[in-house]
Image 1 (cartoon, one colour):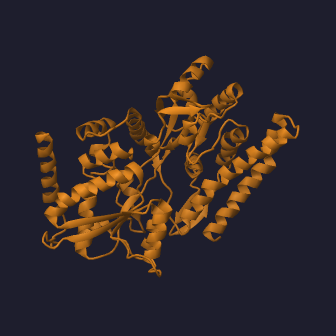
Image 2 (image 1 turned 45 degrees about the vertical axis):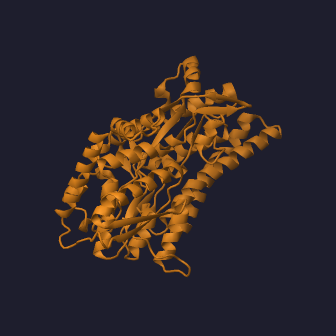
Image 3 (image 1 turned 120 degrees about the vertical axis):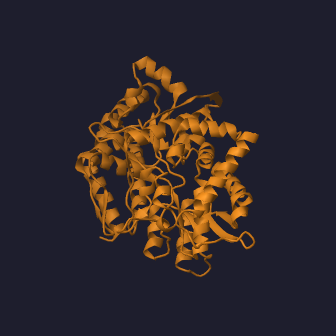
Length: 473
């Protein structure tokens, strides 16, 4: 324990000394008259507990030493936080004062950037310091024609394939399937068909449909939202759109894929699915048991990289919120960066990852074994599933090309259109197939009717029209 405290103390000393030597000459904080930094975020549950504990620790250590007090408020949801921030930015009646720091996805940050309310973090965060962070995570926070750093990376994520290994393994062995059969959407569809024919239940699902279409389009070389000088063009790749139809909509209406609960981890928990693609952060929610037909039994999870399309490029979605610093006095902005730098110091970054399954953002921390060791040192409950998830996610991040959409006016609404359009279309299509079967039409004929080329083109044009309404074209 003493050795651990010495290490932490040295790390704090290095951090404090480094801050005084880096590009912030003339900015002095006074411990006798501390600067108060308000931080708004959307964390809840285990993530909220972890964040609050780290804020308390900062206030009692570096904050007390430097003269900084962090006051954090959780809004409980991404949309609630975004609405509150935008209301504050526009000084709407009844809104709260704009926070000094808030958790933001690029679309919300873009709104405040257009209003001229975001700090340029390059002024307080030197190139040498930025080089300590994983380059794609830093680059995602750059905005504007000059590529100024506006979003500080603190909690990044991607997607993985999570499996109920306990039930998958005997089924796979019985049919000669291997992990390679879960590597593409085409092969997962074949596996799911066999599983449905044998059990009458769906095999696979997805959490974020927008990610599926955005990264799937990019696998075939197309940015569905192409942004130039703030202007957006919507591009539909014909090959990709057909693959979405053939390897999501069609298996969904056939019963091979499904989406029942709010999240696919819920569907695994009740035995309605065996596998799903979701954020690596869902590792903390992956069930340890299945409750079905009045029985409860333990299961073991398994994690693999998310499936690609046959012939597509090896792309990987990059997601997760960063922190932005709003314009204020140099002292407040400087104090905000001191906190964010401390929060992502390797030891702290590793602890936060262990508690939340978010990806570490510094090169020095991007190793699942380091997260595991930090969890042990801190006495945290770091599950095997969380370890495997981070290991697979961090490995895949290095092996594939990360991609995130650019922000533009209406980008959040446009993403919502993509996120719901295919899902709702598939759910309605499944209901139609079941109704046709109930009316006496053979199952194969019912599926063929719902998945016709005419319906495919109607789906494509319907989503295109909905997106153009959102972006105002």
